[in-house]
Image 1 (cartoon, helix red, strand yellow):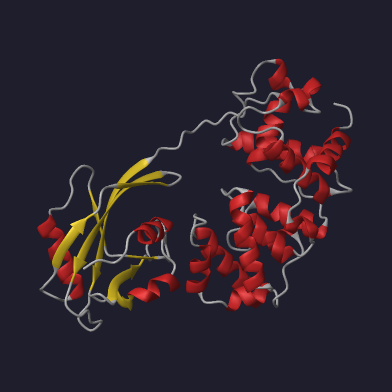
Image 2: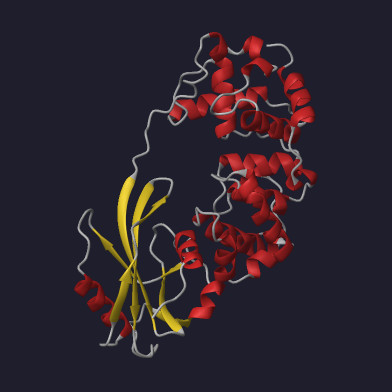
Length: 354
């Protein structure tokens, strides 16, 4: 293939999106963008990047921030383990690297939440180190261009694509090259209906020649989607309500939710069971069930949540009476704690009743 890097670079310089993290070599800001854009569209991630860089101008500021504030600011972006890892890594940088973002691949790779791809991206963008990136966009572009049918989620596939990406890397301008190859996959060699006629690599593309564009890349494993049935209890006395912080290694770890009953599929709890549970956690006998919401379906990457909200009123809630893992807070304070977007959206559409 003639002048792969020249063709790729020319396309990039003409077609790239103007994004703020491309206008800096600050590894902290580049790192934030890379973490935020994992499993997230640029349009969705950009406002969060601006918010975080305005609120925490340096990695030291991020390291010193309370976790609750970070989780609250991350609310709506999803994949909340990214936020927890971000905070942990910022503390690592503060303690292990004297508040200075590490400047070599090995040390960058040692930070919490940073894998091979992210380390290569930061190393090349911020420090011009010759490490090739391989993300979903690169897998797709290279598999189509070279007609590679090895599954990208196999051990052999990961090694083969990493080797090919290293071979193609422009060692003189690794940052520009990496930006270009990822942008090409995102904007030109798109997952569905790519504009192959306008592609500068069309003449050399094996997938186009063999009519495999819609087949490549190949994945060997199909993600199983799990159904879960959640029953949230909105228990309040008109001014206060009951919440609980999710601490287990599950979805929404570190966020707050209303008391929850998770039921087996197709076996909803009886109203008497829900009232009894609410009475137990609040330490109050006089609990009144007001209403139960219609089922709300909430889609996550590997799970489908089927949710109901049970509204209940109680006499004056008191922290001393409540079960130990639950907190009594002001209803007005709900806006100041991190909660799953599912709950935030529901509350935005429903006023407290009782």
